[in-house]
Image 1 (cartoon, helix red, strand yellow):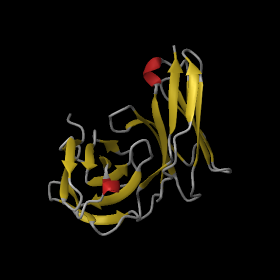
Image 2 (cartoon, one colour; image 1 turned 135 degrees about the vertical axis):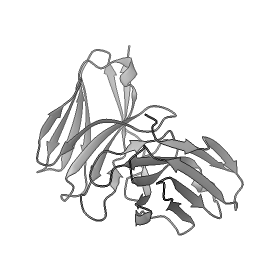
Image 3 (cartoon, chains in turn brown, red; image 1 turned 90 degrees about the vertical axis):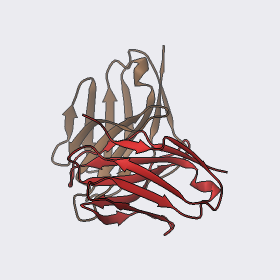
Image 4 (spheres, chains in turn blue, purple; image 1 turned 180 degrees about the vertical axis):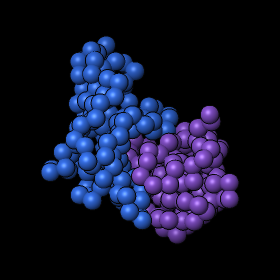
Length: 113
Length: 112
């Protein structure tokens, strides 16, 4: 398939610490990237996006970093809270006629109280 | 403003049967995407519809099909159900082009 359906890696962090979730994307032609959060039993929820002409974008408590040289994306969550516990997916998009979001395999974030 | 809505929320079918899942996009969105998410795994792209036409499909057999109606709502049809079709089927919508897609809560399909 186009997104790798493997077991989910897990990141466990202490409440209040910063979290960094990493993602490697597959196509150098991708020019738009999104991070989604998926809580148990729910659909993915948009967190933050970034276009390929940027290398950093900040939101509320979240920062996305894009390194096009190595095709790497990261999501940083500041002062992680128990409500941040979820599975996080990165998605890449190619702005051509075959537009579709290709999702990474996801990372499970567990926040320890 | 209503988000993406999907129906039904849960469904149990027998192997060999056919199923139809439904999706209503956010008002104003013309693109609808379907994804399959097997339990504990990532999202696999199924289909993309825009302005009533199928624009792209993922690596799924032809028994997975769908359509988009003039009001931009969409159906996903799966024929000859197999046990491995058991998954959460997610629909997302967006404005056409490279903008964020918003997801519905999904339909949980169980094939027995």
